[in-house]
Length: 301
Image (cartoon, rainbow, N blue to C red):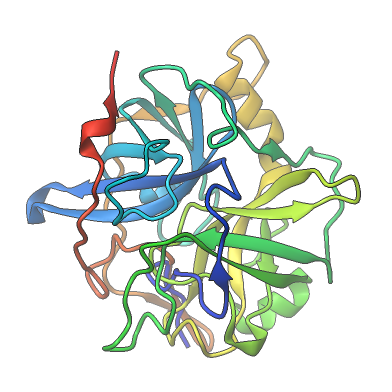
């Protein structure tokens, strides 16, 4: 069986209300050699930083906020921001999904509104959330990413999936699941799919506040609708690193600052019954292009 970050679109979910998740970012990734644009998700965490997956950072050409329907021409609250800097976790490894986390600094600060505002992040003392319902959203495929009929959703969609234990997740992905990864069940053929990579896995607390607890990272290359778990970078394991990057006075290991990262291998590697690959669209196996309306909303310093 295989895991694939290209299999990430929301499967088995529903359309969100417009700007229901005002922290949701749409990241357009330019593939220079192919002259194509790919797509990942991300989350706004303060007025100048976007949190996403490390494997999404090939060469980001734009970060969009306030988007509901990327094909619409009349979304007046949509904004596009230029990336000023990329910070990838220094121990990130695109071959085994470890430390699949990165930050994008925007060239201008974001003005918050009811349409655009940040998400709270899980702290280092957060619980493990096993058996709790978590929500993931994205513009990814709504049906199996390996299907010839699969396509992107122009509107933001969401699905609620239960968090499972790492031991259960390891049954599907042996040797891959560490304490820095959180998994959700793929039961009922629901979960993220191609192009949802980098987006937030969120949990609604009893007080109504949403916390981001994960970043969409990987799933099975056998398909998005095969009842296999999905893997996410666990936010609580990186609280200190994140704060050290966005608040430089905090003590932290020096981050790696890059303008691009290597393209993940197009040949998924084997490890037990599954082969793994990322849940984004940066791999050649499921590559596609899309048209995004809204370049005139570009903001730059």
